[in-house]
Image (cartoon, rainbow, N blue to C red; front, side, top):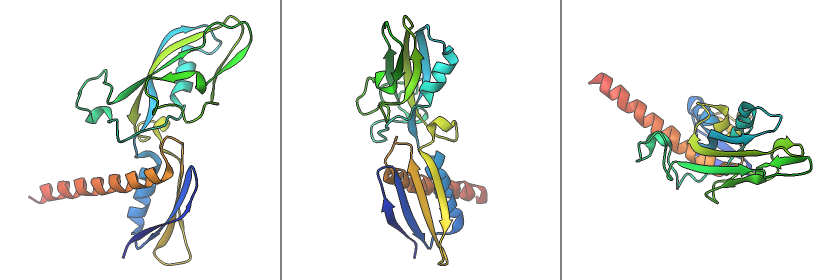
Length: 212
């Protein structure tokens, strides 16, 4: 009899005991929890003004790596959205605006300066540094976040770590997942189980089509 048991749960980390789960399925779940669950990340950046020492490409790269809280119940992956549009819609993308304004002193622009059009989709922390501006320098950008998976780019990884370890008992393993903050760790596990089930169903359908 297969079973999953939570043995430790923290704010961003969870450990579950897998009993009677074949190694190939347990490892597949581990990989899915790491980079197979969709989360938000900034993907498109329009630079309106950037007089900082950081090139436009560097600024866009830093924005893309900021972990963003994700609500999977409200938003769709672009490929699965009803809009079927390359530009996206309010159901598959969220706009962020960053405008440092003018300043007479040197200061560091943080993720708290990044404003989201949707309160539920925002940076996981307000203290992530983006760029340091000297007096008279300014950055102003508009950017769009969308759901993606870590298999496409690491910025969409749903977990920092996803590790499977053996115990001293036969056919028993511990799966430990540490979230980036985009999703709660238990959400990653539940979504991972659903994703694995869906992939297995799709694979079985492919096999049946070949047999026919």
